[in-house]
Length: 117
Image (cartoon, rainbow, N blue to C red; front, top):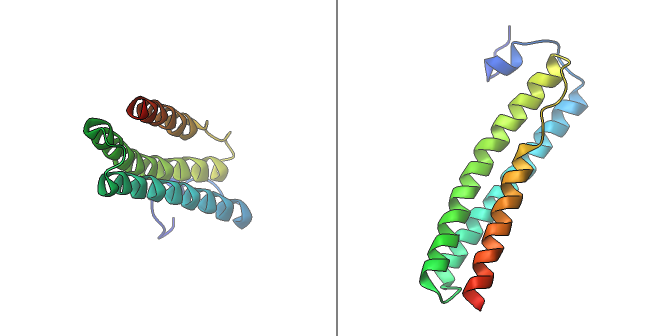
């Protein structure tokens, strides 16, 4: 039993090599930086008024802000699932977060193309 949280992660299995735990934390922080960039992009689109098409700008700004929030949430879940898998010597979970970000970027790019045409 440990005082660390979340307990459903830390109360299971054996303590992994600290290098792997720290690498998992660095990956989580990289996803948080990505989410912050998405939030900043959404705010910038709204503040700068680009593109001129109001509905596209609003849609992209809202989608970027929501995506930033979702990426942060999914990054935390991903960190916990990987940490737990390492502690219990299970295979690492799949990389579903990458699909979400890729899809969002493709949809956002398509909306920008429509706005600039």
